[in-house]
Length: 193
Image 1: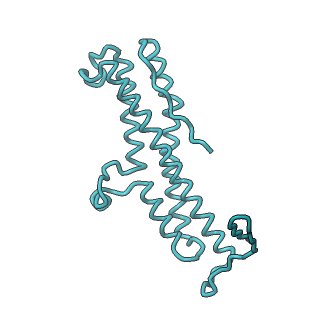
Image 2 (image 1 turned 30 degrees about the vertical axis):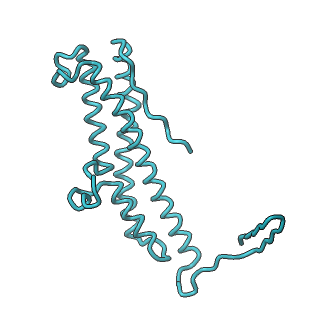
Image 3 (image 1 turned 135 degrees about the horizontal axis):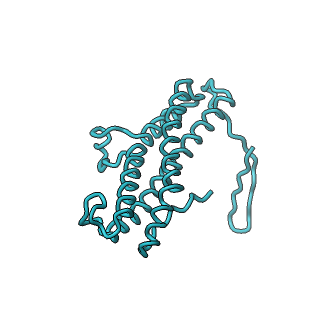
């Protein structure tokens, strides 16, 4: 039960009302709740992916700037760089970040036509699943649940890889940068709840 209030100047009126299901629909309340929970779960997962990509891109900018500062521009894979160990670590981390981003998100999309030209990635697949699950008033099918579970496993693999990089490799790069007296790279801030 909801309440609606109309206020005009000093006068107001409030009435209770109830949202009723479409009488033409055979969906039960449990079906609608299952659909709602499924759609929100997929939406939240997409948000998590996009926040991870945004953090990855912020850190990549810092890493690319650090790569320039250590003289990587004129060196091949850290060879002949002013700080070869640091240059190699940055180069390797950038390659790993690129791999994770490309698994989660199609980085070549520039126009609405591009999804036809380049393979869809995990966020695209979850988005398509979200759109399908939102159609009509039905609980998600068993196949939708199976696809979601498969996609979630693939997303978890990439997000865990990313988390491992932030935990294990970025501190080492920052340590090497400190020792070389080069400004360090900050990890992305965790998303706010």
